[in-house]
Length: 66
Image (tube, rainbow, N blue to C red):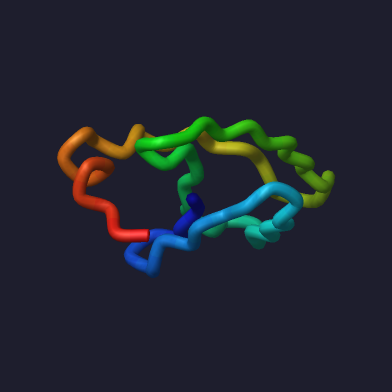
């Protein structure tokens, strides 16, 4: 699953490609009934960095609709 802040949750399947522009807060992870592995590539640029944000809390995660 992947979602940008306050947007719909997108269900992912093997081989999907997701592009998140710089400075866009988002999250990604496994569904309750599966696992999730991903490869992240950060493209170098001016004034860019990776910022790890807060985890999705259990209540939000357990109530996701996908």
